[in-house]
Image (tube, rainbow, N blue to C red; front, side, top):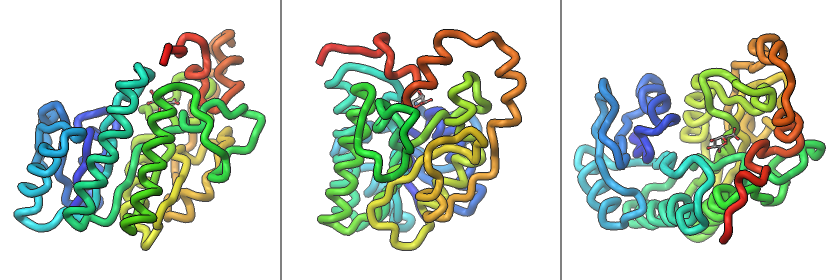
Length: 268
Ligand code: 15L
């Protein structure tokens, strides 16, 4: 499948671009930054929130064959002002979806986040029926971007898969991440499944590995064909050997962990 990956130079993009190529996809990278050393796929330095830049990218990238899907990873991966969150997550998603409609591209895989439901207490089950409950403006941006995906799925029959990613890291670094970790290899497996599953329509799934301590439902991902293989448990002894801190308790209380704390409060 020929796939445009936005945010291709970011932390997830750097793993996903070669991972999708290894799985036989034809990848086109797009980012505000130049391609990392060693990148072999076509690359566009362009802003995916700028309609003209997106149009020029798709016109050029389609010359050697149509782009068939967009994996939208671009976005500020942390808390920011409300304006920046809306621009970074919502406007980019809308710009790309409009371009997809114009170009007949029928699938978007979106890097949403657990912070869309981050204010949900950890005592509650977390599945795809969990209502939006953002913990930050970052989470608000992800909720609104998911709403756009649903709108374009209904209006334009775009297959739109929102992956509420947990903690994408080489290995977990906190006790919370023993449940929320998404390994590099599982991230590739998950996005590949979301790209290739037949007719998902609008779908939401939680993006974590097969962690023994996970409390977010993995069934929606499995329904898309995502079978995670890694488990954070292999790191548990080392992490638990470290003294417990107050942060551990706060982080354990809500889905979004540290994003729920006052350090993340911003005026609107
Ligand atoms: C995210 O969505 C963030 O981009 C990342 O910085 C982490 O905070 C991660 O979630 C997480 O919840 O661990």
